Structure formats: structure tokens, C-alpha cells
Length: 64
Image (spheres, rainbow, N blue to C red):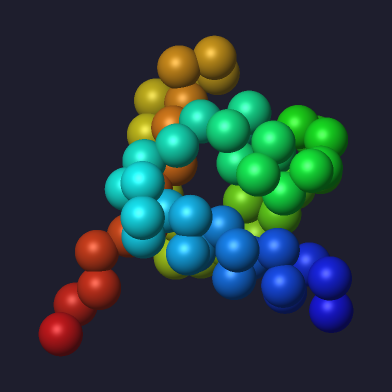
């Protein structure tokens, strides 16, 4: 239940800011970086850009 709520918070955050680093999302959720990455990896509507320290996340474009 809490994970689903955090996923919704991440979606809203990325709708507002478009792109974000793991540390920005973790700070917003008040979670550890590791837990934040675990949640992000389960989200199919999130796209990871870049590798390792340069990684950013954004919402995938929806096909209409």
C-alpha cells in the first residue's frame, strides 16, 4: 500500500519537474536511495536515462 502511494507521488513529481535524479526523488519521499531505486525499477511508466551517477528518470510518453 505504501509503495503504491510512493509511486503516485513519484508520478506527480515527474509530471511537475519532467526529469529528476534519484536523490531528488528520495528526498521528496523521505526514503533511502536504495529503497527509491527499488520502487523506480518496479514502475513500468518510468524511463531511466543515462548510467550510474548520471542517471535521471522521466515519465514515458503515452501512445494515444
